[in-house]
Image (cartoon, rainbow, N blue to C red; front, side, top):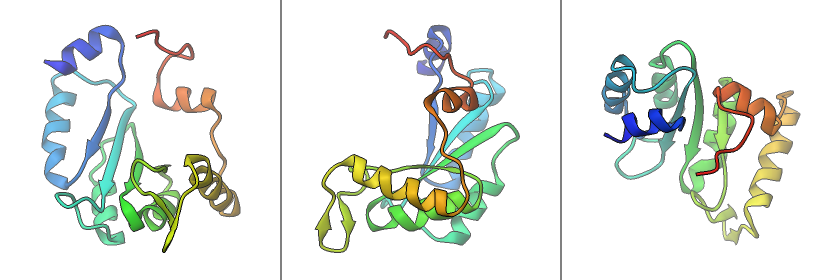
Length: 150
């Protein structure tokens, strides 16, 4: 089982959930002791087999989080920016970049990932949300301050 090997090697998994039914898998891993808190949950929304990307659906997912969870919201395509902002409003974190969306705005491609990061950092700061340093992010996630050599 991958989860057992990851735990043995000290790898902290990120749990990507595409719809509420995936909480069953997460719960099995949690109850089986295969993952430890803080739990890194990433909601992927806007993907064809996932939850439809609405504020109401995101709230339902967030309300299912177990204690000691940190959540991120990944919006696919043109849902990226509105879902990132919603996550910030809810106290969550975000993932941005060209892996999920190649457009900066309608009809204009992103130049690079840095452009998407700069925009969400600016928006977060305007919302009085601090940006974590790499050290702070590692602390929040409960991972070593020394990057893995694997």
